[in-house]
Length: 258
Length: 63
Image (cartoon, rainbow over all chains, first blue to last red; front, side):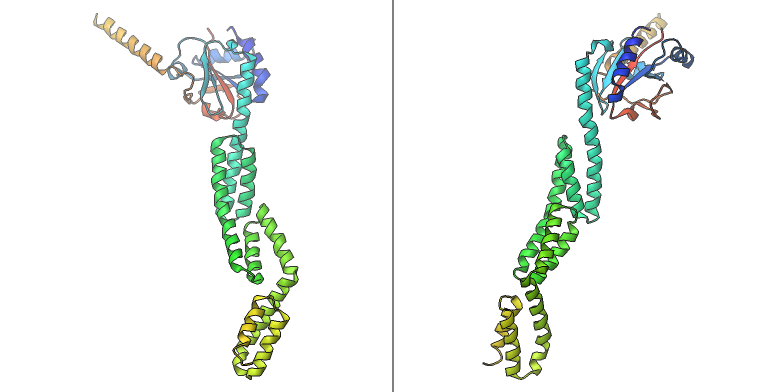
């Protein structure tokens, strides 16, 4: 059979870069075995499939097809030696990103699973990595979609933080919840750092302490003498003038005479 | 004569099938299950098991 040396050379040259050479014959097993074990010593895969001529609409022997990573026909003719090195190089180069994107699609699937489990931060960070590496438009579009869903969670927490206003205790609680939900992502890390700083600040401590003082005082007010109640409220207002509880105490004090 | 006609018809059908079914550039390569393999690089049993590779399918004959 002419061409075997060329096929062996071709296969040896490119097999490590993702080329597979399948030589398919419809002949009897013993004849094929004779060839494989004979002096030609093919280094490539030899296959028996009795219906190859019918299935592929053979127009003569030999015939060959070159298929891409998805199984699509790139080339169909009789003699493979018509294909030059530049063409093989091009096809093999195109093969590499297809493989990478397949791996990336798997990574994206695991990001979706994280999202479903409520690990939004992990999903976000993993999706960003995939989006950066992806070359395939379909993979990129999936990334954008997932990132938009994650972003909705971020926005939700941001709105809650805004709604908390200068109630730093409520704000810190939302931030802590957000940092946990978005753990592993940039924004999760940012909130985690911010909430720790916030809790260390004097304003936060004052807000928390004044709220606690006022909460304790409130149920006892009706049993106190007006002047005592007023004094106690004014004390909180004076000690913590810039806190929500301090302001509330100042307002309440007005209800207890002057 | 009748036999001759029948044979011609058969040949024509066989030819038509072959011509129309020719797998060409842009087609998806039809999958097929291997009846026997030699020198396989893994546990592949059908063409689709080679997805992800650049694959040459060469139809050859010993004669």
